[in-house]
Image 1: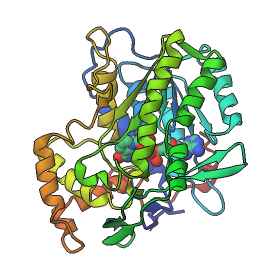
Image 2 (image 1 turned 60 degrees about the vertical axis):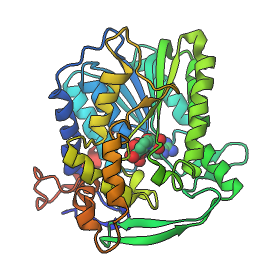
Image 3 (image 1 turned 180 degrees about the vertical axis):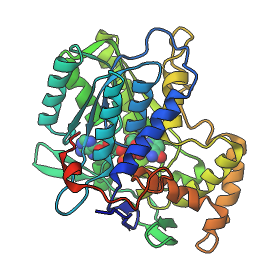
Image 4 (image 1 turned 30 degrees about the vertical axis):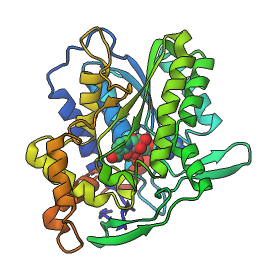
Amino acid sequence: MIIKPVVQGVVARTCHPVGCKQAVKNQINYVTQQTPAQTGSTLPKRVLILGASSGFGLSARTALAFGAAKADTLGVSFERGISDKSVGSAGWYNNIWFREFAEQEGRFAGNIVGDAFSSQTREQVVDAIKTHMGGSVDLVIYSLATGVRPNPATGDFWRSVIKPVGEPVTGYSVNIEKGTLESVTMPPASREEIEATEKVMGGEDWQDWIGWLAGQGVLADGFRTVAFSYIGPEQTHALYHHGTLGYAKAHLHKTKDELNQKMASLNGKADIAVCKALVTKASVFIPGLAPYLLALMNVMKQQGTHETCIEQMYRLFYERFYTSSNDSTVTDSNGLIRMDDWELSPDTQSKTIALLEQINPGNFRQMGDYEGFVKEFMQINGFFHPEVDYSQPLNLAELKSLIP
Ligand code: NAI
């Protein structure tokens, strides 16, 4: 079978398993080519990643397993394998290839594919930590991005929405399928929608996970945990920072402080890394954000500061999170790790906003880095990798025999 890219709006309906392998390999190559960091003795040796199969989670896993930490990793993700209807999701294959590469280096790399909100998945994680990771982990990375979370009390679901709060916002969304920029007006969210988004993307589940792992005795003394946030410049605040997602992130930030109090007895520490805006399966879905992303990519590439997930995660763990100076994490005055520092630098912002103000459906390909945006989107789904011969048919039986 020959697999071609099929995109619906901004959702990839196919992925290329061999291209996914190349994407994982490229991230590993990036990590192994860095000069090993001098980060003291506290680098984590056993890491649990919730949301490990793509985006920041996969890159964090790669940086820690293949960088100086040489960590064993356990990854949780919600992905689908090959079926009669579909070839499966990119994250499914990323899990497979990551494990294969990590095992070649003698590292443990377990994958649990299931709903991170379910008690069954939680129990599987604890079993795996006890069986394969010496009984405890010293870092938990919380990198889930999802639209739904089951409400155990009702059996129903909380569903997050990406909307402004208070006033409607009009902007442009990109449609990768059609190659167009389309005007969208987002109505303000209702109180229920804001609360549901907080439930799905806020800190409650992070707190539940840490509480559950602590209760099961699988968090090492002095363990650390980190979740990811976004703030962005004022020009995007109406649709993100002051919108439903921003409310959820504010809840996540508050949760960090609560966790720090609760976990003191284990010498545990919770952090938030505020990351830069970049192309992932989740971020392309945010209505109205694309023009900013197109302008930002254009400027940061010109300035030589463009980063994808792997560069961000490598810099996070080896320059900010675990540091050589007495192992103290570098944070701002609010206790947040600012991986968006290059994005928000005055020079980058003034150039980006100047471009953003001019971008429209007629000129976005010239004013923004649309080509780079599409390339990154395709590459995370296994396409557009020059090393891969896409004319080669894939063996379905062989693909079916692969398990994460
Ligand atoms: P992503 O879509 O690439 O990855 C999400 C991961 O969560 C995948 O591994 C997926 O399998 C897993 N997942 C989703 N639902 C699950 C479930 N029910 N059970 C188990 N696993 C599940 O997303 P991305 O962009 O890496 O986002 C991760 C975090 O980073 C999010 O909190 C996001 O808000 C944050 N962030 C993202 C930025 C961006 O530009 N992409 C910028 C700053 C923060």
